[in-house]
Image (cartoon, rainbow, N blue to C red; front, side, top):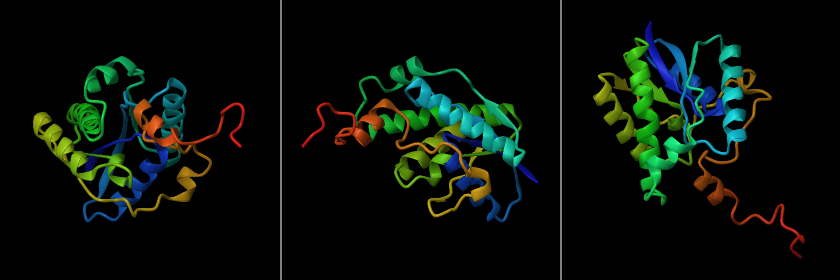
Length: 187
């Protein structure tokens, strides 16, 4: 059985990634890695980490968690590059670079990311960042398009499910046109 490190940014996408791995011709033994300095605000970051921890417990999988809230690290990485797709490319490079290093240090020859399950992410940029990180760390990046994968409902049941990618810029993009929480309410 081949050990694989899965970079996880949320529980629901982690569930989809685990489902995708089950369909692979290689039998993988997953270790989960949480390392997401892009997720803001702090409460959102905590909600997602808690959900990933709960899923790892349910699935009886080991979890390596970088529990450092990375506001400053993320802001430095994207400063001057706040527009899509530049911001996303830098964010992917930051997170997948760290995941590749953790994979190497944990003895996993292969790593992947829950990012590959998202219909909202740029898969070409994810693949490029993953392959560059893999080459730099001396490991392999497993890219699969698992957007259609379905998580095992027992694993994700009642777990927090976010409404935006994670960074403050994506939160703004997601909610900028909503009228919720305005006072007085729009007519």
